[in-house]
Length: 292
Ligand code: FAD
Image (cartoon, rainbow, N blue to C red; front, side, top):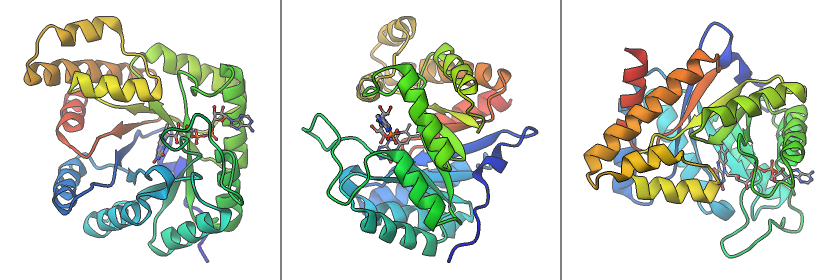
């Protein structure tokens, strides 16, 4: 039986800035080895925790746990497993949470997940959960030792009928036990600031941590941004498009992300969550620039 949760929120105390890095499970053994090298590089920035995503329909169940177990064992840093409701009954979710608890996972990023590829709408499996707030409630009640983060959407979740409805959902997730909000990636800080103000007006008072994905490859980021609905500023895209050169894209992307992060920190965000895409260079370049 797990002990009461080390509050994830305490990482984001007023006198310090929290730092987390999000990984995804590699598909090959070479990918695993390379990932641990990148994690080693990122350890230089003294992150508070690493997270690892959970593949569509539970396709990475074992892999997600094995990656975060390896990161924790090798580097001793706290770890979070993402977990979605897609394709799992409540009993299967419980099994995963039991396993995560046994593996000394510290936190869960509790999500509903996207509909499986080719399906328009999310449909729970019989005996499954419909929304992330139900998963948060399950964890809070049955696994009190696990800290809980939930997802927030500065540009509104694409299925939500309105920003207000999306915020009401977010409030439900926080009221159910979500201790911290990690946001979807975004490139226009004004979207984040508007979202943060709206959360406060809704009575949401947990740390809201911006999700940052430095652009290093225009085509890749356009694909990711269109999948999650994030807008890329036209001036930024046009600057990147001026040349085909990958080094140019890296340099322009890092400069943009550095300015974005500087402005967020100056505006008092409680921390940063980097989507590192299993590579350390871009995130390291941004953090070095910001901290210099
Ligand atoms: P929910 O909070 O349940 O919301 C889903 C939609 O339903 C929203 O539009 C919401 O407004 C609406 N809604 C919620 N409750 C109700 C209600 N009671 N009535 C009506 N409408 C409601 N995906 C993965 O597959 N694996 C991952 O590892 C992963 N990690 C992520 C990490 C972060 C930080 C973020 C921001 C996203 C991540 N995602 C991941 C993507 C996420 O699974 C999708 O965005 C998914 O579509 C929504 O998940 P959610 O937890 O936000 O869902």
